[in-house]
Length: 346
Image 1 (cartoon, one colour):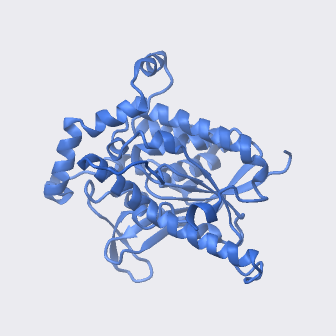
Image 2 (cartoon, one colour):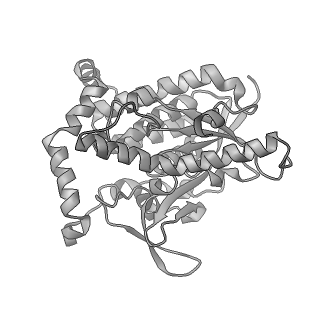
């Protein structure tokens, strides 16, 4: 395929599970026919998006790939060394890793502590461990007008509404706000340039995981490729406290995306039926890369456990999923959506 295919990326958040998105992006960068025009991300999706854009502007495809690897090395991944290969060969399956984390003493203690305490109880001893990573992004390129347009979502604590940061608004605090789980981190305070008032923010996943509407801009392409790391469906009914908490987490962090997809499906139906003239609203082409089989083997607790084996397996799974998507649907990009919205959300 000789013509460049311009697409938008919508990157879900999900803590350590964002390494799956790292693998997807790594595989997309291999394909020189594909150009990313816009990126919307929340939480880990925001960090992946910032690393992708900064690296792209500093060194093209190789720069983006290297910057994503740098990011995940900071978050717990290790390079592909002989020792790492040896560890991977003897490491348990994703299902066993998920259960080990879910029922571990450390996970149980952290869950109990989150119900009876808060990060504010730490007083002067509080520290956000992500800050040292967020502050090392190159914001001259993250915020640049060139390259993919980047949108980062965070949730306003007082209003419950989403705020989208873009351009010069993207700062270390904006990225930390997008990834602020309130049981772990203090709300991130950022001044509203329109009012001059300071507002507090929590994780963007509560109100947009990720937000799709910034990608509806007329100068951006019609194709939106969503990288999902929170499974939509789970067989059976959760019965244990861990299973219930895990499913609540998944439903909560998928609800905003489902609402936007239903709205897209409604608009597409109006256009198809001739009840809405073409050009009045964008006829979005929706695509999705996911591995629900893998993600249902993991749990909410593994999102908080960025160990090198787990991150390596997630990256590999992301590359595999992206490879399968391109093999099946690359020719559909720019022509038609590959998600049956009516069947999924009708």
